[in-house]
Length: 201
Image (cartoon, rainbow, N blue to C red):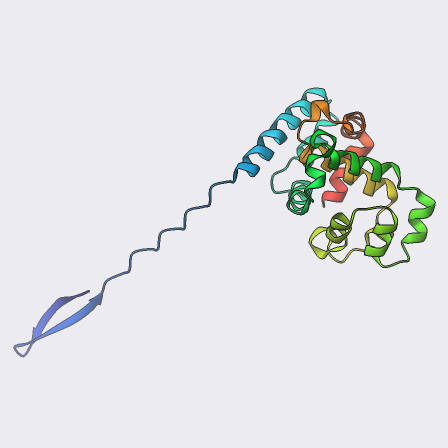
């Protein structure tokens, strides 16, 4: 709708200037409420973070902050893993099948074999390292490490640290987790703390 703004008359003839009304700003779209699964995952992560912070030292506390950063590399990786997680890995081992899977992968990363497989296409190399298909698909995609050839660019211990760091972000109950011991050792190691920060970029 427009209104007329009168101007002074010139030679008895009135002039008017049209003013265009400013449209009202479009209200922002409301954010979707988190799903029940997202709320459950968030609560489990809060519990795991409290547990790890309670057991950490001033030196190693930075590892917890780095891994549990809601906008950081490890949380994004954990979310993508959970999005792709097959049903059988959600229910086996009382819900800890993924924890067991990640733990077994870290203990099977032998440096000599790892170096040889670095010459192969990444997806095939990960399958030979016994990564499940869904995880090999994810780790070989650009959405995790971009174009970086991770087997050539990352030492085996750094990939093992990454997988272990993700465990408490995906675990249903860290207090009863079969991988709890390795998780605590990783998060309480000053060397691991530096590696976690470096890998997160």
